[in-house]
Amino acid sequence: MRKPELSAKNNSNINNKLRKGLWSPEEDDKLMNYMLNSGQGCWSDVARNAGLQRCGKSCRLRWINYLRPDLKRGAFSPQEEELIVHLHSLLGNRWSQIAARLPGRTDNEIKNFWNSTIKKRLKNMSSNTSPNGSDSSYEPNKDLNMAGFTTSNTHQDQHADFMPMFNSSSSPSPSMHATVLNSIIDRLPMLDHGPVSGGFFNATGPCFSTQSGVDHNGFYLENGGVFGSVNIGAEGDMYVPPLESVSTTSDHNLKVESTCNTDTNNSYFDDINSIILNNCSNKRTENRAGVENLFQQELTMGEWDLEELMNDVSSFPFLDFSNIQ
DNA sequence: AAGAGTGGCAACCGCTGCGGA
DNA sequence: TTCCGCAGCGGTTGCCACTCT
Image (cartoon, rainbow, N blue to C red; front, side, top):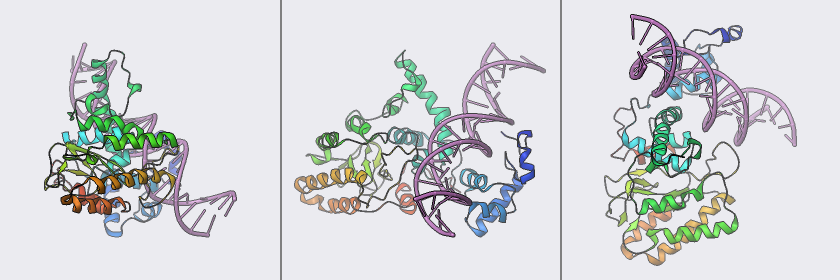
């Protein structure tokens, strides 16, 4: 760990009275007290008003990654690992997006965990399974199996099959758009007969079931949980907050967009949703009407907020948040 | 016991987007 | 419209602790 004292490299900062490196307990106390008493404002003001010789950026980072009261400490549980791998297969290195679905965990923590543990595991497994495998040839959606996490070979595989289409790095062309739509519709078990699979799209992107079982609404829940934003399963079913729609621009930052806006990116999902909803209304039986309403409400709902997210995620039996301070 | 190698993690760096002036 | 400050993000670095030889 870095030493709290100024390094020689940072001597220039002496003039600026700005410290770098590890935070001392005194600094932590100052920041913690200030944040608890005054709340977050402009971070440069926080640094100044709290009497810290740190830049606002440093204060923000320290608060977010270490001092925040709702941080969950300790090792990642196997369920969290699985969730991280799954989310990473969907989102790539959008650590903040992944962290948003793991309450009490920070993007930095998840990033470090991924780079130090999971990546290594994937690499090992890759080298075991294919002698020519290379780290750089990482492919989303291979994560789950390569990392040794168990997945259903039924619906899960179907999900994995079409998930790359939603890689944020590329925007579907109009022709691909139609092809993808048809492909998705064809593959969505929920639009067919029998138990409704948890695979569906909401306005914020694809939602996936990963836990096995059929809930009382007739929704088939596959191994691992449901990626959706509506708690429509039986009590005890696991739900993960929805994935936001992903901008397909070249921005390195993932754009979090309102699901209600009507830009071209979201129209992609809007089209999917409209088709799904049409199919839903045609194919679903009467006793699913209530669920349909829930879907429709959800599909037109705006972006989820943190509070809602916490409510949703807190219903996960497999995520232990008891350690959150 | 000691040095080398490695892992884990806190913190920094550089970049981008956004909002206000 | 442009500029500036800020927040936030992902990549990278640096250092301590642990393990290995």
